[in-house]
Length: 245
Image (cartoon, rainbow, N blue to C red):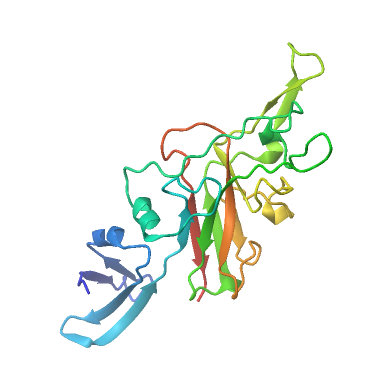
C-alpha cells in the first residue's frame, strides 16, 4: 500500500499519443518471488474512485541454487528462494560437457545420445531447472523466450587431427551453454524446438503449447548443458513470459 506520484501527459492538440509516467519504483526490486503486486490509479482527493487497476504476475524459475542436489531437481524451498535473491551467491555450479563418456573419440558436446560399444544408453544427466507459469496466465495466448549465450548444437565442426591419424578434432559453436527440453540421459534432437527438435534457441519465442504446457500442467523441467568455463554469473539466463489477456 505505497502511494507514488503519477504524471498524465494528455498529448498535444487532442492527439491519442497519451502517456502515464510512474516515479519512485525502486521498491519493485524488493518484491519476493511469491509476491503479487497490484497498482491502482485514483484521484488523490477521491481515493475510493479507482480509475485504473493492474495486477503484476511473477514467473517462477528454480534451479539448485544451494548446490546440494547434484543433477536432481531443485527443492524449491524458501531457503533456495532466499539464495536466489542473494547477489553475492554464485548460483548453480555446472561442469562443462567436454569429456568422452563412451570412449569413442567424440567429445560429449558433439553427441546427442550416449551409447556404449554394445549400443546400450549411458546415463549422463544435465542440470535441471523448473519454470512454473502463474495460474492466471492463459496458456494458449502466452509465449516464453530464453535469453542466453547459446552454442548451436548444429554448429559443431570437426577437422582431421594432424597428430592422430584417423581421428578428428571437434569444436563447439560459439556460446557458453545450451538449454534443452530433454535431459542428457535421453536421445536429443539437436534441431531447435520450432524445427521439431529439443534445443532451445536463444532469443527465439516459443508458445507455451510448443513447450509442453497446458492448463493442467503449468510446470516444466528444462536442462542446462555447460560448454565453457565462465566467471560467476556470466552464464546467466533471462526468461521472458509474454501473454495476452
